[in-house]
Length: 139
Image (cartoon, rainbow, N blue to C red; front, side, top):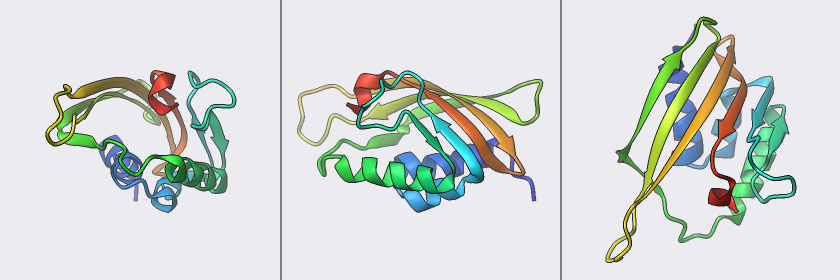
């Protein structure tokens, strides 16, 4: 059964940003799937390139473990995204404005992070995602 770009994207976001579940995240990818964050410098804590479902699982699990327990979580009610289909039915683009709450009782304003992700799909799974965001967000 083929999934729509909307279904693929929602499953990917739920597994990654919402629940930080590396097993569920990896299952969104083909066996040879590739995750790339081309703007992240080499040697950063956040993985720049992961190849294969197992490497995606292990790499993201290691990153999630390093996150501070008080790390601010995204507010999905305030956040938004637009999916763009392309002339290639196996490629879609996600434009995302993710909002991170300032936290209870904080005098700080919410933080808005804008990013773009390009998805290449094969057989209803992610064959490649290129994730473009400001690298200092994950340092």
